[in-house]
Image (cartoon, rainbow, N blue to C red; front, side, top):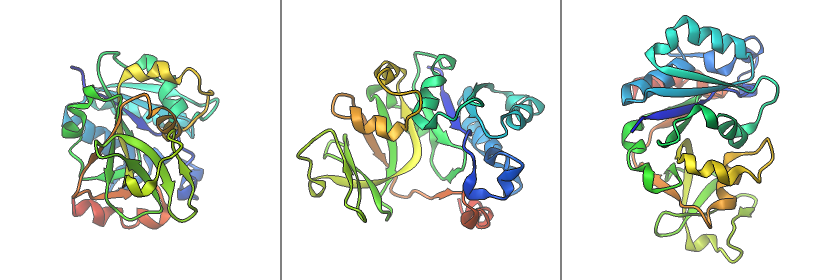
Length: 244
């Protein structure tokens, strides 16, 4: 089985302004290394051989960077969203033809730093249509799972908002976990995206189809994770990396 992944690198990087006024978030350095390189090398170390990178903001800079580094010895393919940013779901669907149809796809945000064993997480995905890496950290927004770890809904504990295809779902009957920004999908779910608009979020997709598709949660209890795509966390990222 080929190990393949997609890195979300198309974002505008608005939380990192003014740095991202002249460069894409993917090329912002953390601990002396661009975020994109960190994720690509972590995937390479885990055994991934094909990586799709979507681009939009300063897209040519990312293309030139990959070319200058010989794609780090991997089969790196670019999904170009320069004309229109398609959000996470639309971005995955646009890149569908760049993947091997017989292997799961690991999805990884370019600004996520973590201690996740990506190979361990990826292996065993086959039985599920999608697998979401979650943890029991405190947040306002939680994914809701049943006792079989099947996704049932989403809730915002501050506003009381809830999304679920199950009309009578009670959040108190579910297991609430926080999403990590790392997930895997089976290529067979692409056909389920046909009814969605050109631009849509992948989490909205998951929540709309979790009643008919098998969307599972996977918990890492000792998860260490940082979203380095924010100005207030970027300065602490070097210290965070040393602690991994």
